[in-house]
Image 1 (cartoon, rainbow, N blue to C red):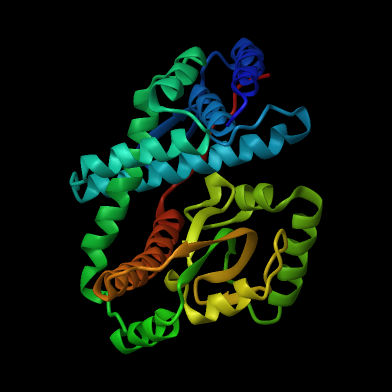
Image 2 (tube, rainbow, N blue to C red):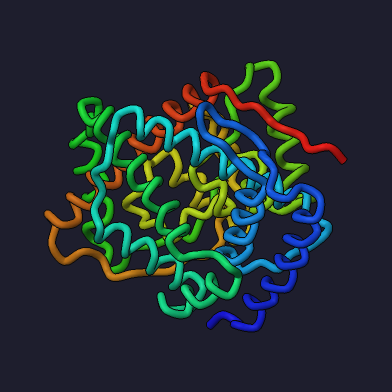
Length: 315
């Protein structure tokens, strides 16, 4: 169970941060992303959200990293929103929205009402969190809509995975995080990987994920949550299973970048009783993996083509 007092300690810190910044900038324009404006108060609010949802206290030593993470997160959301509005896409499942809200509360050991109270005390309307979740759900729906015809699933590979687990009474699950860094040339890739490893040693995996990862999980410190062994492709599984708890995997070279996992914990669950349910579970997991790849590449193309202009206030 989370320490409620620890969460409420964020209040004083963010209040002081607000006063300090407000005294100088008075909520001036921070940046424009395409036709979307970002104010300094948007960044402050994002910092509050990050601190609360990750159960972190504000640290002066990590102020710069926290600000960079918040800026990156707000810009990513604005770029996605522009694309969603371009296609006039508005289809999402209300149940998914409720589920995501509950996940955020559960991750903090709270119920929805307690989560709302914390946001209200920090002068953040829960609707802000709801709107952020809606953007992600709409983005995921849009990506599916754009790329659904390219979702080619290898059924024979799925069958092989099922055969491997049929004789098991239990299924292994892994609590993992990820960092995906941008692709680079063959000549530079080794030095890039070594640099990332050094940063992880000094700053910690979660901080590096927030600051440098191009994955959708960056704002959550790379957190992928609990992942069923049946949902992990063979190329990833061999690296994950050979990585000891608390350590990072060997780098995996992908077309969309370099992937590094951190294995945080493991547990065993009872396997599916119904073979067809297990098969559907694997098919859906494979679709999710493919859609994630399309999401990354689609967003990267948008980011490169979307004008971002930063505005500076007079000191």
